[in-house]
Image 1 (cartoon, rainbow, N blue to C red):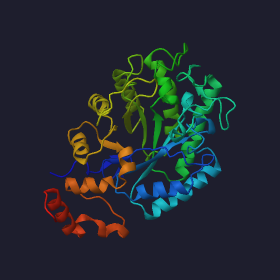
Image 2 (cartoon, helix red, strand yellow):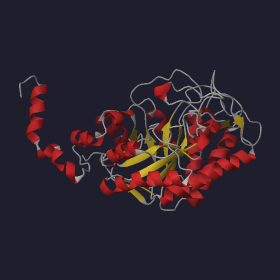
Image 3 (spheres, one colour):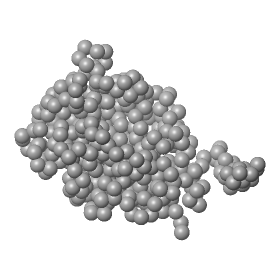
Image 4 (spheres, rainbow, N blue to C red):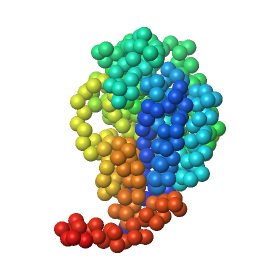
Amino acid sequence: MPSALFQPIRLRGLELPNRIVIAPMCQYSAEDGSATDWHMIHLGGYALSGAGLLIIEATGISPEGRITPGCLGLWSDENEAALGRVLKACRRYGNTPIGIQLGHAGRKASAQPPQDGGKPLLEGEPGAWQTVAPSAVPFGDGWHRPLALDREGMDKVVADFVQAAKRADRLGIDLIELHGAHGYLLSSFLSPIANQRNDEYGGSLENRMRFPLEIFDAVRAVWPEPKPLGIRYNGTDWDPAGFTPDDAVAFAAVLKDRGCDFVDISGGGNSLPRIPVKPGYQVPAAARVKAETGIPTMAVGMIREPAYAEEIVASGQADMVALARGMLYEPRWAWRAAEELGAEAAYPVQYERGRPAKWPQAFVDRSRLSEGGKG
């Protein structure tokens, strides 16, 4: 049987050659939101990895929408030009469609990068800024108190998403994923943990979905019709007080009716519960969303082994699998998966002689060694 993981999939006008997605991975290496040579190296490598889709890291729609001062942004001409330089090289040599994740970090913005501790930048610290959220509720002890967004502030956020989407289109980006997960702004509106409003944007699930849907609709209105638009959001907050699996299914159904092309189901980040982390720990949420709504779905969460990724897709739990840390460790994961599953992945011509079929003796030797022989 042909590998399910290596079957193409069409999202609106974009056909992906396989179901392997390189998930957005923050690099904390931008300068004033602009891509640097690090992004050239990082994205350039993944662009020729043979994956079905590369999604650029969480990209702030405004300076205050970044997670950290080192996060990528797409709010200025300078940001656009810097990312354009990187994309030009990726397209010249790469073989992978490229998307981008647009987001606003909300009450979890203005923080240090993880390598520096990941703590909030407090008032008066260099680089700190005022954060915003659905309600003036800090993320946790020691975190800054965000401003609760009023209508004017919400309109600005919508406008910032729209202008970032227009810039992404000018850059020739193939797909947009809105970031609605992990406790960032859209996620915090969806979650009753962070959203304690008593107006039409708080309380019931219908109200809590309202602002994320306004953003989705505004971006869809300016994003070209043939290009896919999706959203990553939580299948669960992993907290009984938060966004639930039932909520996740209901949100997907509404998104599907509004023309959403895919959902990317993650979890957590609105509070600090103990999450039972293990391979595939987020997959059941994705499987339920797909089963109950039929919307094209990405699964995430410590998916490392090709055989397991194949099982997820072949069994219908999800349409695609998205890898992050696994790709950081093994950027050519798609090549290994193709070899193990008896499939083909794209190689750049410069690397063609590295295909196992081009030097099978080496792999026979490896097999003998694994059996205890001397090769």
